[in-house]
Image (tube, rainbow, N blue to C red; front, side, top):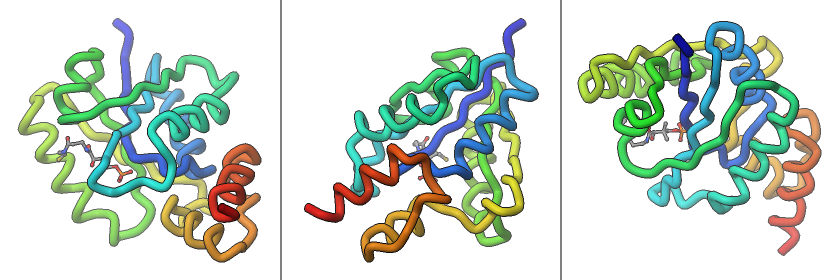
Length: 160
Ligand code: PNS
């Protein structure tokens, strides 16, 4: 049996923290599907295609990782691709309430789906896409937080 884990998110943009969790997920899953939410409600800085492109770049050579876009319910998409694990990162206690609700709702919608929370590497714990966007918006350095291709794209975006 092939164990497929789904790692969903907005990834606006993908950070070194996300990369870390993808690598960790490959330790227990045969395949990791990174599911990029269209998420128009959040008005992402980067288009869906850009976010997918960055993820393809950062996961190159990682092995059994697939990048897929999805819209609609995560629970339905997980069922469609045969995933029975949802991976989410927990950085701080402040993440917990939302993540807990989401995990319970997803299992309510798809009883075969279990959520596994992973803790990122210690030096990446404080990292979030929104913080990275904010630093970049005001011209701060983001090189340590994201892949060089993402860093260049952020600089270009805020130069416009
Ligand atoms: O990176 P994010 O923005 O925290 O990811 C949130 C995401 C995309 C995983 C979540 O909003 C989601 O699963 N959206 C799809 C719609 C859905 O299934 N909503 C109900 C979940 S309880």
